[in-house]
View 1 (cartoon, rainbow, N blue to C red):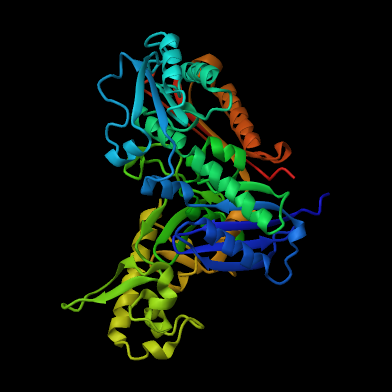
View 2 (view 1 turned 60 degrees about the vertical axis):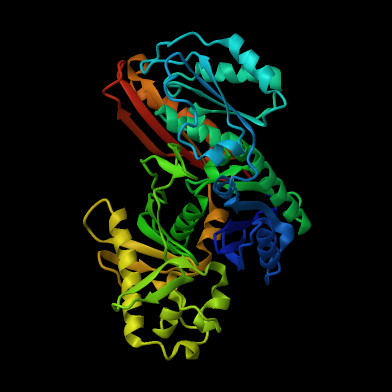
Length: 523
């Protein structure tokens, strides 16, 4: 067995970049919290350098490096560093009424070149062809966009039912553009619902270079610390990992990986498999639900950077409550906390650190609920009534969100993690237990380091063709294949989630099947 069995995990948040080193038994050896920088990468390098300098760290044993990053989210929100995308919709003449990207913000369309084509083909909801695939038009498009785009996004009508037109179109494009040219196809990314699936596919295509640059920069940062042969993984938004190569195919799956890392880290640190996780940072509080040890997935369409999508996302609520949240007392005596925040500047601007802004951190320090944080003498003259009201507001904000995440009326366990979790009371209404584990402040980085590798598929099958039992076995096989492609050890893979929902409005006993397979890192 190789002695390259230690792990370094890094997670980038809006305020802090956290890093941990775990040994072969997943014991925490070193942990640091470093301010997130505007360019993100230098913050990662700073955190990496600091965590590797920790006592007891043997960098020669690090064989795995995991990164949970906001690079892709930031690129969409900022409209920067995006690839030029040629958008191809297979669906003429049926889908002419609504153009691709019709409801996108104009500046985002412009950032990816606003170039789209409508091609004959696609399928009906029951799998019948709308029209034959227009292969000649695809070849013409391929020659037209050569040199004018960096990536291609292909979407076909009802491709989750029949993906044959998408895969054939991709093959035709590669004949002209090259075997390694980045092509995203919608049946691998979103579910049924043409426009949202198309949007997710276009965003995925626009992020290929961001994912490539992020992976290469992370590898270079590791090399700068003399770690040159570690397996590199990026965190997915379902609480698992994917290889750097896989991340370049599906970069959109890194979006919202930060909260899921915290959820997985909370599960690992407490041993709980079912609970609500409250992750309090410097700017926001994110709440998610642990179900069987993994984050619960959202069933709703999700908007990213002003674009409505339907690809896999965690069920997360975010509120403007963090350690840097600004506290205000209004003329009528009411007190508000946030949503604006001093963020990573809290150690300079908060009153308890010698600054001039009243923050949520000052409130808990003044209440005596945050030992070792700042200087209590600097907030000793705060009005006790103000402190009491502000703490009540913060507690109510969290209690309301916990209630929103519940699926039944009974009390549920809550796990507090994140550097700002000192803000939250140890007693909450509607909660059975409030747990705050050791190393709660670095739960997100721990979650990135201990994560397994997953594969997931979501397709529409006709049960009339194979029957339910055989259809589910086929789906499990496809999910297992995806997990192996993402870097999982084939011998360790388990099926952790199977869902089949009959689609009464479709013929052929149609059923939407979703299967998730999870395995350990391939060592």
